[in-house]
Image (cartoon, protein in one colour):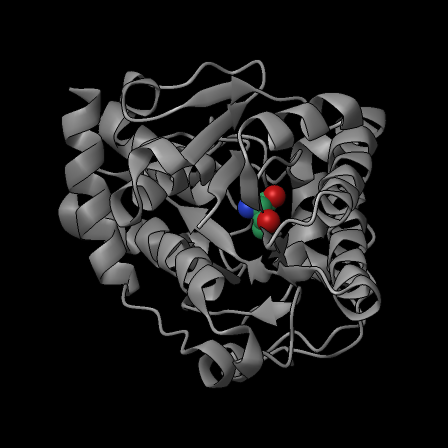
Length: 317
Ligand code: AKB
């Protein structure tokens, strides 16, 4: 097996994906690509790392050749809320960067590219409950449009050029190791931090905003399981729905109150993030992922709340 390069290792998912890949494979074969945000000691000590700007094709190609890369997990992305405020950078990273990854993988004969998409790839004309895998996609956000670009280009490189590109549409991801702040679904992580630090949280989404969510271990498991799937069994490629749970800010606050009865929630709506959330699915039909590569989530909202609270309390103390 050739080496695995992960882009965006310092991000919320990358920072947990690299250790998981190093546990599954030899640590020396998993290269942590990062840009600007420094890596944790743990990642620096357990395998190779490299500074990587995905918008620079020549630098990317040199890394792919120098490190004998066979697979890229392309995790670097400017998330939904930030992408609305820095459109040019978001276009460079999310669209040009994704194109560079695919073109570089194709030209250098790589084995696979794992290219995550998002629930943001849907829009207000998409059916919002049990959103079908193959349906109308009309996002009206910079981030969502860039995710549709990645899905379509991933499928193009697969069908026209024979590159094995695979991707899942990730929901809001809840985790305690790296704090995400650039997305719309990140209120759910912030609520835990503030419940532990201050016993209170002011939420920027309305109390009844229902969104698909997932605990990090399920997201990591999905990425690795899709990577390992036999290519013969895949009918879809860059555009799999996956689903674990749906909850609202009010639902999550009530779960946290079971653990911390002093916790109080208040609301001050951010119209930009609210309108994004209102255009995204409430739940997804993930039967294609279940049928084609055996996707199955493990964590419920109760499991997630208990595990998050415990681990974040340890981390913050
Ligand atoms: C975001 O809110 O930007 C992301 C996503 C739903 O893809 N977490």
